[in-house]
Length: 122
Image 1: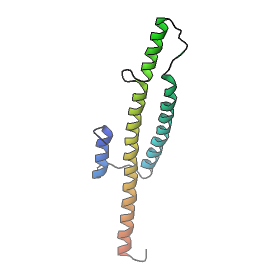
Image 2 (image 1 turned 45 degrees about the vertical axis):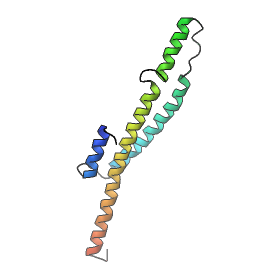
Image 3 (image 1 turned 120 degrees about the horizontal axis):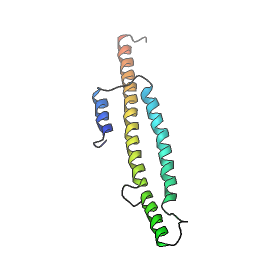
């Protein structure tokens, strides 16, 4: 989770210094998955923006079209890069929430085994 704030949050989860109420992590991971679907759709739709037509053949129209095209892709921090960056962060978020949920599952299994060892009839 390479240096982002979510990488630091993930480290807190790994050390056991961060947890959420039962079920909340799963809900957050699901919301991240839904948001990722939306971002992927936007990224696909953004491909339609890399070629702008309809601004005419005059030099000003061609220049304006080129400027808009560069905002979509190829310019200084274009839309396609911004969406890719957002997707990467949301994937990191989802991984953190999934780790929290997995920790609950591991703890639950550990507790079940411990109780079974004390009272084999359970």
